[in-house]
Image (cartoon, rainbow, N blue to C red; front, side, top):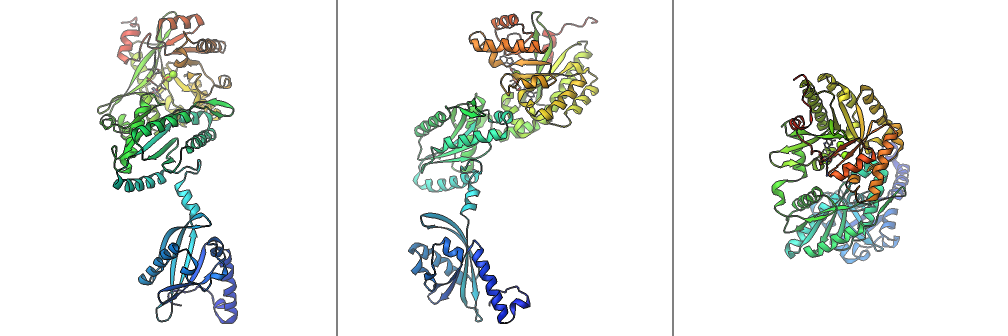
Length: 571
Ligand code: C2E
Ligand code: MG
Ligand code: MG
């Protein structure tokens, strides 16, 4: 039998008994394998005639034994027969295995098949039979192009469809829109509520977006909390109207563990062909526009403009630069005084990170800290911040300014670093400073992992370091942790302070936090205080410390010395 050899031992190969066993074995195999097997006889013409079809072949291709002995043309719809005939003829011409993928419809169901045609020769080297093995790869294809969590198309599908669209639109010169959607605060919700809740949010978002999917509109999940929409035949005004519909799909709240949350999207848009003639440029430019939206306060949308690239190239470039920022000495710390009231003295300062890049200028921490957290760069940057703050304490103490305290922000990712405690200890020793002159600020998000966080905070506390909870009231506000964690202070988030004078609810929350803190023996600091009246209110409510533009913006260490530190007596 031509090139084909069966690997069998003697027992199966020899004699009638062997043949019988062979048949049984093949019958069993053909009956149970899920691939469709067709053996075709080759006749002159060439004509291909069904000789054998296995169980799966009969069932999946919806054929019956009657087709045995018939030709492809007699059995199959004309177009399918013609295309198969073509592949079979290629096999005869090329005299080697042919592999192809096609989509066929059986009982109104589209099946994606992958077929291998193998020739079987006789002793004169003529192809006598063709064995066709067809695998149903519909499911595999589906999984390759869909996101498992939401069932939406995935990034791979986006690239494929985008390239198809570009090819087909090129001749027609039609416009289409690539709409890049990112969920605001998703990372934060995911960190504070847990990944299961995060998954639920993503699924709900997918369902809400799915209502827009039709012939002209395809929805993709292209990353963690990133979604993309391709909108065909769309002018700018059609796209505008569409995006407004997307926003209204987010106007209903989301429910998680019977709590209500609001989630807004930020959206960046690029238009084909104006903003890019290839997939990569279109995606990059939509992301660029999205980045602008995020930077300017989120929950909004923006079309790409060609001048965007001039200043901040894109997030990827920003990340590359951020990686080098420490080595290139582009990072610095500024210090914002925390004023004791009513004495109006400043003995503690919050260290806030600043990044100045020669190409981009000053980049706000609200832009690069989330990026640093996402990429893990926050770990090395965080170490840099701790060391720099310790060095500053040493400098001040050498100048005779003692009894000062610097608070450093520690991101949730950093807390999970196993060597955080030993690093801080090393820095305290290196700069020979008092541990009481160092404070760390953690957010409520960091406290969710009770098991991991308590021992770390306890060790820091044992060293003599103060611990305060930043942005108090905005995160995972479980009062339980106030009892469990070894904390020294609460910082009331500036979002409450902003409206204390006008909004009775914010005023009530603020006074309640102050009373709560006091009765637990914690120091309470109000953040974001900008007006005299706010100071008065806080003073009356018994708040001990105030941080905000009213007294001072964050300033350089030298400016702190000039404006806030009292000249040492021995000078
Ligand atoms: P945060 O820790 O809550 O810091 C307070 C933020 O409020 C600072 O913004 C500060 O400049 C700003 N602020 C202070 N007073 C006022 C005021 O009166 N009005 C208003 N509107 N804002 C005021 P900044 O410096 O832009 O930092 C933003 C956030 O970036 C910080 O919020 C903190 O979460 C993060 N961050 C800053 N430096 C670091 C750092 O070294 N490490 C880490 N992990 N995060 C940092
Ligand atoms: Mg802070
Ligand atoms: Mg804060």
